[in-house]
Image (cartoon, rainbow, N blue to C red; front, side):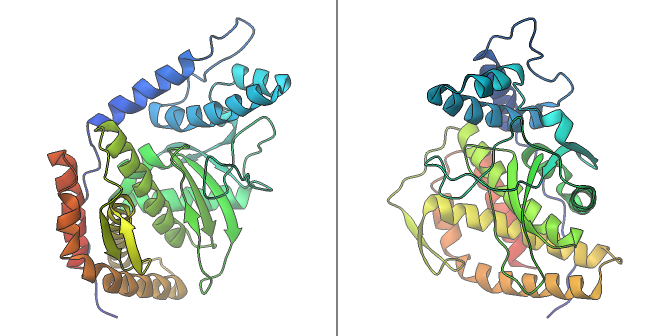
Length: 310
């Protein structure tokens, strides 16, 4: 284990993304004309939260219509933001919906289980809401406020774990702005995974906003999966894991309130990620040639380079 120092902040403001967010929100809301007796969209939601919520509405309303579930479809018509406002906790990056579902959904729209906000969704209990607030603050305090503000405003808690357990977390492309996270009672550890999954959402949005289509026949060796992965998965890994490395270095250097167990957990994580990232030093520049947008390409290169020297 080696001493770490904080790195320069990452600039997550990428012009095409907020434009796409606003455009997508407007288009989704326009799909369902509201009646005078229906509240429609919540005017109190900012664009990033409305963007995440609108996709829950879209993915909930469509299957309800196909199944002929009139009551459920009417609920979504009356709640174009899928009831997000009542599920929110106040955090350092604004209101964030925090939930702990009883069960997840399996569907062809995703390789992993997921959850849709709906009429029976309840806010998470007070301890989980407090944990989420503390994690968002850790992320914001270490330079990731803009990332989680725009790309992780709906947090779905998964299983409760211990430090020695394997952690699972994921996002799905059909629900941008939503993150699904295992958790322990350690906001610094939760912030690490919050940032990782927000990073995946950021890159998905950046690729969409720049109309970037990565070729499916280009593969690169991935140390994290110990296999050759398509360019899409490889570039995602070489973006999201370096972000967590930068976060971990920052919090280890800056946060004097970390518990001994939490500090050991994060230090070991950073050591492990150094070993995974090192073999990508030569292959990552090759993969970047597949990104036509020069600004996006440089952002991916810069974060990867920052992490390599930690």
